Image (cartoon, rainbow, N blue to C red; front, side, top):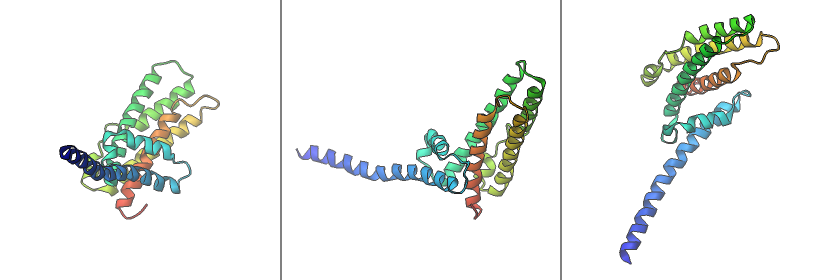
Length: 181
């Protein structure tokens, strides 16, 4: 009887010690996403939470770790978008759409394969901000090309939007380490 009590007590103590840490990590994701969304009407809170929590490390990290996760997701999305555009270009499209897709490929190819992780880990947040701002500019330029096609369904809207959202996450977090949000 005494042995059962000891095991149950140990389990309870272990649970109480671990539970606040898990809960606070989830709060960090939600709080960070809420702060980003608070003054950015086009920012998607649910996308932010879902993206950051999807990473296995998302439940274990602090805000700095969330920035690294956001950066990793951004870089993966740029690569995925570039590959998607290459596949689209293999199909027959109207000339105007082919030109827009080609320009988007050029924009994303400029930043594809760039690894900003060493800069981030070295706490060179200003440099990360400059480079991610460039990604955001490329996304915006691509999105503008897409909208000029006149009446056709934009093929890259979701990809561009995901890159924009992820860029915003990284920019917000790095800016917070620079003293501005």
